[in-house]
Length: 138
Image (tube, rainbow, N blue to C red; front, side, top):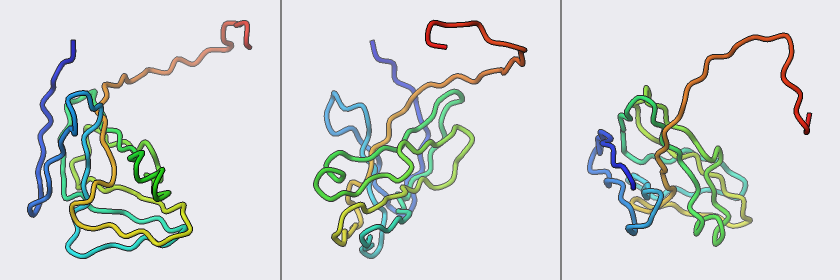
């Protein structure tokens, strides 16, 4: 059974609220929040505004991932995929896009540029030891 957690969100200056495209979607679409189109030249990496600020519950991260359609059709991907938004970051979420193609790619306001998946995570406490247990793989 799926659980639903609340995530506080601010949509700055009329930015589009993220939404699941279908009931079975794992990620929500993130849209560009631009006043003018943004060109991404071949081989170029740019940061694209979403106009969103989120506050995640402690122990949750937001993973920003490429959209398969942009990657397959246009060679445009999230450069640091998955990008992580931590629970203590409340600034604007921006998407780092890279154009791997040989063609100019234009991003317009409202375009779906990435997807965000929410995941629980654990923190660890490192324990210094002299040696590790042997395993079959070594």
